[in-house]
Image (cartoon, rainbow, N blue to C red; front, side, top):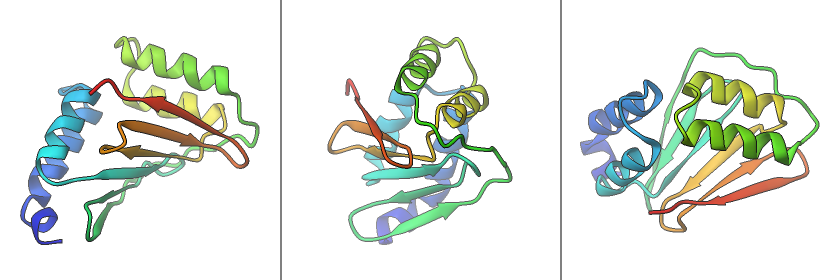
Length: 130
């Protein structure tokens, strides 16, 4: 994790800027990719993020608690994504919306240019235009 460790402060800053809407999701992805990050997993109920490169990972713990619904509702996820992509909701509101739609975590796969939103028994995959 030499590269990830060297850039850990930068990675944390990029993540924070994205959450605070100072940086768009796609700009954050590009910047994270430039630091050697391959992707990350976000646990929706706690907002904790595990960021990984090809060799190792680091987890950023958050102090949130959201109840994730058991029923996976794809259209609610798509609607929440479009609102977020169009700047109509905050990151916090987006997380609440996808929790209500049954998403327990999502995985951002930078080389694969996709995000996978996972429920208990179903997934929804979105391509990233990068």
